[in-house]
Image (cartoon, rainbow, N blue to C red; front, side, top):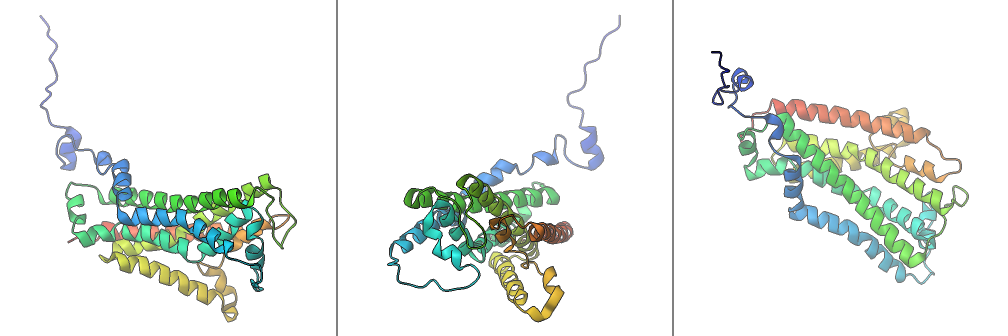
Amino acid sequence: MNTVESPDVRQPDRAAQRSGAAAGYRARVTLPLWAEVRRQASRRRTQLTLGFMALLPLIVLVAFEFDDGDDDNGGGEFASLVELATSGGLNFTLFTIFVSSSFLLVVAVALFCGDTVASEASWGSLRYLLAVPVPRARLLTVKLVVALAYSGLSLLVLAATALLVGTVRYGWSPLRSTVAAEIPAGEGLLRLLGIVGYLAVVLLIVASLAFLLSVSTDAALGAVGGAVLLWILSSILDQITALGVLRDFLPTHFSTAWLGLLSTPTQTDDIVKGCVSALAYATVFLSVAYWRFTRKDVTS
């Protein structure tokens, strides 16, 4: 009589045997993405950063309430943003993004991406994560995705809060500037979303640079500060016209190209160049970060 032999449930996983891993080990389930999201959400720096992004538009709104209308906002290329900030919610949001894009958003993105790996090393927990074992490439990918997600969230919180309080206080009116005709509110909102999207792409340079420094040092402050200082240095060099065409290759050269979205018709040439530049820099920095970390001797 023929009998069907039941499989031996105790038989070791052949794939695991070939790789040298323990039976049942699956690299893709180590360090779950949502576990890292919750872990970063519980950190004080995440809460304070997102909280300040929501608070900043309120601070700007209160500051405008003390304006008696006699102060001269001054000239300059972006004077219209200051003069028209109180003419509607869209303009108030545009002004808030403008005053935040050159430094505050840079610091926030550098903080999320520069602190993520270096802080683990400084706490001495990085080697324990790798001993779970979490594959190094997966650990970097999870931490990078979460850091970028919180960076994007900080930008959205800033813009959304500014739009909400600005609209409540100054009403819903067309987007205005001195470089174009008045833009209807519906179209102005779309252009504002385009500005936020472009800034998110440009800030990938800061994110990837901070992430590279984060895997290169055990000092989180050094990674964050290094990324911010290099961004500031690039901004200073971009003001030196004697550099000529070399300025086109600086990371910050196209950081204000979003102004083209305020013109009629929109000017997108510099925006396209800025996106290409940002993605190129981000690709290089992240590639070096992965290459360095996968070969690094982690002792902390």
